[in-house]
View 1 (cartoon, rainbow, N blue to C red):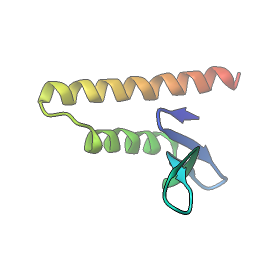
View 2: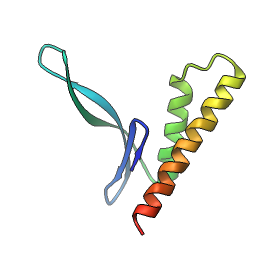
View 3: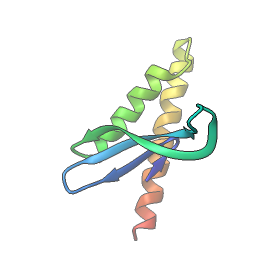
Length: 91
């Protein structure tokens, strides 16, 4: 499941949260290829989604309470939409 720049996968023991990044060649130049690196292993989907929300809050550029509130609402909507889409795709 993709949620913005994040991807959620699972194995028998964990829900794995990864973030996208652009690969670089040996000289450090961008290659245009996108890959994912794991940033956390969680017991369930809810915990992974909370990590996304917390990461977006910490790395966002909100300077006022209103901007922070909008960022939180936007992130929650992004997570909810991705879960709904994944739910419909699995039916």
